[in-house]
Image 1 (cartoon, rainbow, N blue to C red):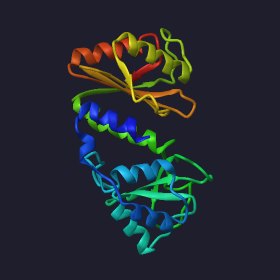
Image 2: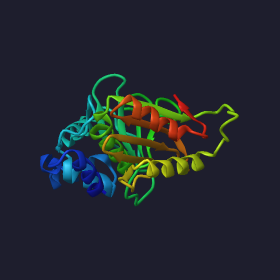
Image 3: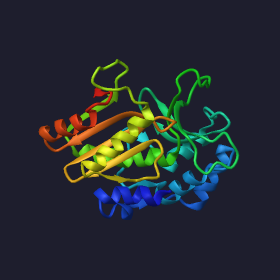
Image 4: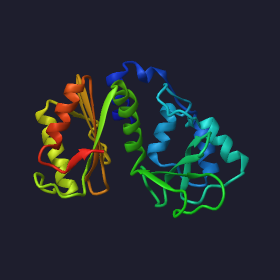
Length: 247
């Protein structure tokens, strides 16, 4: 799983893999015991390659390091509900920690969700479903931080629910296909193709970050470009005769 993630980061940050530090086998075994259930293959691989140091690719205020995760479990202050494995802690408010939702036996990868590690657990309360897998989460993080952050000019396009006389209302799945076809015509290369929740398109002077729903339908596309003129041009082409509008 991490091979594509590391390749994506190194596309923009050569030598990234040399800065990674993995957790030791004993630390990983201890975490599995404390979690009270087997770790999915995806998280085990993550810990082995970068459990001690993610090479600088992190989210501000979020701690992924295995030492902090072990410290949380050892404290016993708030045992996570069965089927949820803590893998990152938000140190400041609103303290919505990151969990892998591994509720079925034998899952090789698990959805990423967030909820506070305190009080009574409920999926109906403070609970956010982020991504369908750790793989999607990491690829999104890589492209967002290493590519999209490189552009000062960005614009979010989302499907409009209002009828537009000049634009037939395409289904979200059809809209995702239209964006893919137009991105290719505009000279974009699609990268990190194993993601099912995102599509990432890259070009020397621009990038597209596409979010999909569970059925593969388009939820939104963030356009990034070096110049205002190119940002307008790409946005106009993607939105032409579609329901996409500036959010």
